[in-house]
Length: 324
Image (cartoon, rainbow, N blue to C red):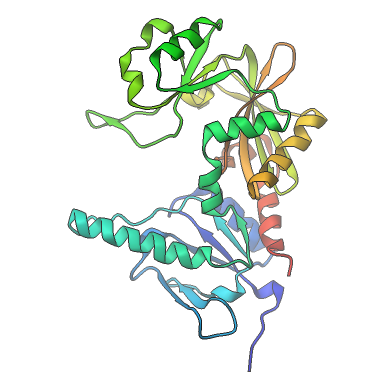
């Protein structure tokens, strides 16, 4: 006999690290809707997390369970997966070779089982997040969709870089991908920084660099899109990169022009994403410039600052799930 589970009983999987205030906000909203939640972190694989899946011997393409010390869920009954900020295990107690091997088995075992679930809604599917997280592809798609993109050069040719910088009034350099980085044991990060032609030397040849004409901005705008809901927050500061000093920022709810408001959800649809955080700049003429998309960007502090119902929108999306 096959047992079925009502939509109301089907759980939402939340994959994230142990301390994640943003995920806590969404889970609180799901609890208010009486939606079952199974929270786990891939780094807990072992005693804290067990996964089993069976293929080829049952009517469903994949059958199995995810088990934590407090929850067990049938994979076939998952209504949605909120892929927030999971941490993969590093296995520091193993030798380097064994740790690399074990970490790969978790990524392709646990990850592969979850990716095989074609029924639930993903917010967002990690493979689609990865595909969307390439700035050159983002810039090209933004331009194709009619958004205003600053002149940008990606190159490892120092002569081309100097020529590009010389042809624009002011140019900034940005990293193509944030990565953990330390100098003498001190963590550092890559901010958007001004760059001059004189600063470009032959070391540029080592890897592609992103150079972008500086927008004469009066404010930044962070836009969270959840499904078809758009939440825009204007961020005022005197900073080129507002992430440098959160204490120097002021926030107000922004009302986007209709063209931009419609383009951003459509942008995510092109990428197959359910949500994303966009960074825009507003210039002195009131025009909006595309800067970048973070498929899994932070937004929790913006809800606290503005009262916008962002976590509620996420809970609504995950509660709806696949709609079945």
